[in-house]
Length: 231
Image (cartoon, rainbow, N blue to C red; front, side, top):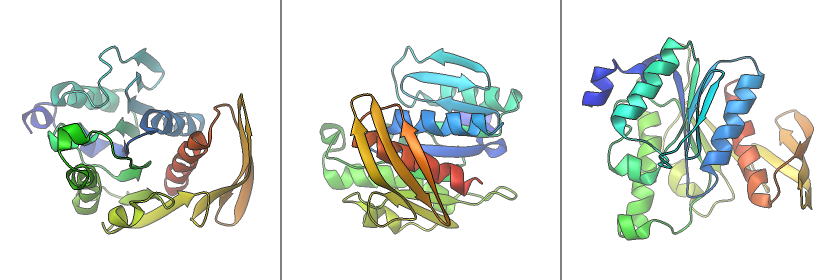
């Protein structure tokens, strides 16, 4: 809270997108950042491997997915000063449990997937899920910014989809390879990448993805879902 206060709650002046889940957070965060940048927006990002503020990009030498609260709030303040509209943040269960993101008003919460990981820290799967759920609670209960909806984006194919779907939001979007708001079909996997047809409401778009693996198709769907909800 002191860090947020010191930097004057910069998250209140950004549209903040939180990406959580066991796997795929970094790729999804970079996908979202690239899409928003290509659409002409100024974007800030903090991920496991890299940071970005507008055109400035640098490596995350700390290798800490969600950095400490003072560094994180300082980054957000720099994003505001640089004129960024969006902030894309990887949010770990550790960070949520340790309140590293306290004072950040999240507008979009994205869940990539849940596997039984980090249980040595949390002690049980239920505790791990409860920690992840704090991001969706922040979106559900967060103060609304003028003209900005509170959005929940969930992987409908994930085993724990229903658990995270219980949290309220102004808009809910699901993605997956089966039945979802946004889905992929005609997936063709290649060593150098994947091709598929991306289905969004009232449209279908062929996608040539330069990253291999079905898991990256899911990451792309998560990013497309975020981009669509942000118009």
